[in-house]
Image (tube, rainbow, N blue to C red):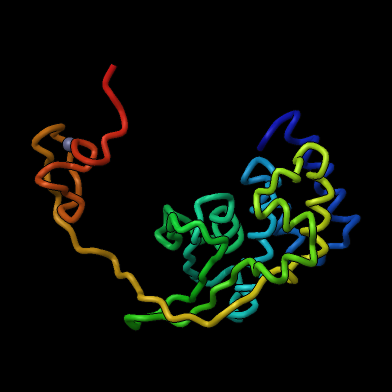
Length: 212
Ligand SMILES: [Zn+2]
């Protein structure tokens, strides 16, 4: 749990949720997401509404095994992690660096494909909500210090009104069979399908640290 400062903000946030009469279960989702994320970031809040909408379209409960793909790494991925337990760790969340504020969800399937739903922020619908519009378009008119709370309230009252959905079919990825390969460079072991040009990726294109 967060301490001190963060708690104070969480309290304000929960009060605003109550004031705005956000209905359950999305109210609890919003609150849990904000805690997990360590702040009630606007994109995360919209994400909670998106997951709630996707669950309803799939006729799914949060107890079911659900898969999610987020089309942006910003904020959104925490919503399916917290609400639907689709996490990067359990392999049920994929984050694609596309940059669209969209999420696809589907139930588990034994077939090579699964039918799911794609929920996205709709550029036309967002126009009815000026603050969300200027925040979403990264306009210099938006000032997070003076407009942050009002933006939150607009997100709460907009809910799904800024979202659209479509039915989609996605490929099902099965667990890969693998054998261990020892990297000749670092001597650590990686699954064979992750070897890049005879080495582990960290000794190749994914090198991300220098030894000190
Ligand atoms: Zn290596």
